[in-house]
Length: 576
Image (cartoon, rainbow, N blue to C red):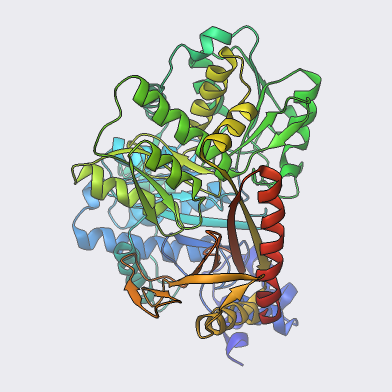
């Protein structure tokens, strides 16, 4: 049996350590588990690796990390950029420090200098460090907000953005050339240091990053105006945001930042939460309790690698409401554009960016300020690409970008979502409104009153293992080849098929070219302005459905969303 022979190769070869062999022996008689661990190699996708921690080719472990690092090293060497070096960061997840060091030892063995952070750091700081140190690439070991069983390996190009599709394909090609997992170049940490190939970095990059963030403040005196009474609760959810977020808030003038002690320190088990995801209200249980006890205005929570941030605000009735990523993004967008307009600094060539599954409210706001809105595929890497294309290499000015999944970015010195700069701006925005006698929740309602009550939702279905992956592909294929006329009683206006790169208009039968990269995504535009989008997750065995509606009031919009969602799921669920 093919899978068993691969298992035996790992068990019999001296290259693999005893703990790995012990783990594999414990599952040797479980045929399904053996198959799942060895039926394929863990795929290096457009962003890198992400998978369950464990032994086997379809798991993330020191051996699969070494192979990925060898492929990346070969790519850098072929470009002739080995002298520029590579920066490595990691978060608080299980095995993150170990995977980072293994990667560094492979790079150094291939003649590439490795800059390794001395302890956990946010993903956006890795992006900044690549640009600051003028490195050829960067790696961050993280699985973002995934459950504790996962870890990952994200690769960044020399522009500080996630590796481009072409770059990823080139690395994948190099990885595929490695036929024997045991044939990877590696040296010891001691040898790497003695040869000057491994350099531990820390405070210098921290200081430069914080100084850069300070330049992105909009109302620099906002905190000072309410500093004595304005209170913030912050939780890093056991992750990398603890030090930088608290530092930037303190240096921005916020005097009363209460930290959730139970979630302050790194914990690879994330023992206080079901999942360290600031998208979920349950992650804020401790924070809301602390806020209630201390009459707090604002709660901020960042995920383990501190690239996503969640916001909880106090309503007028004293209850705390968890904002969606779309709501926080639109509040920030309105705040930034309003401030720039008031100061006469809103550039005619400015642009903002959102992903295709992010709220259409962003488009309405951008149109109001006569600012171009650029729409990209799901994934912040595509927002980073637009900064490079339009701002760095073009003649436009990047103003702000965000995605519905709690990722935001202001400024261009980082090329990925940044929960540290977002935390700073969210706190500043809340203080600015408080000085005017308005809560952040009031500000949100004002945005709705001004532009319309846009409400969004999401459904996701997890289908584990090899069979699950196939079922997701089959469901999307069925939907792609079926001409739907309506969902939940609402007629379809047009269908965007990003795999075929075309938009099909139902009434006329006309097709239009889509210029975004090819992707296995279907987007349905409805005649009443509603929409939904179906796509497989890029990091987990999930299929996701995103929805967006609008109506005259918040209650009407929410009711409409539930009816629309039910109508869509009536069609999709039987396919799963």
